[in-house]
Length: 88
Image (cartoon, rainbow, N blue to C red; front, side, top):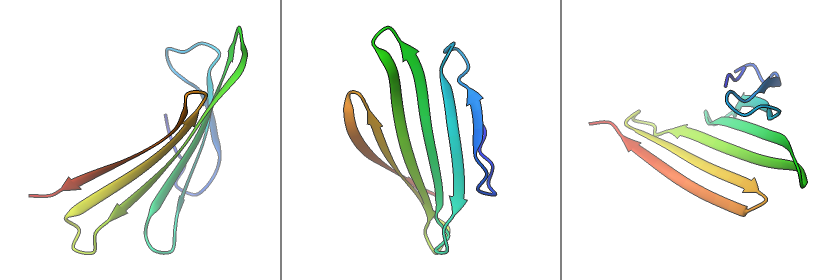
């Protein structure tokens, strides 16, 4: 999947999932965080299924720690995860 870093909306089909489409946006916040939003829709026998997610990427001031907070909302419920990467 490809995001436009200029804030433009990108739409594309999900590889390997026929009939599933994704709408993607990315934007930079004034504090330097990168925000990635996605909305995936698929037609199923039970109707339209939507999965939404937001990722917030931030780099520490010293450039040694990257933190990614992901929030997902799907028919199975909401989930938030945080990943922290430390440069050695």
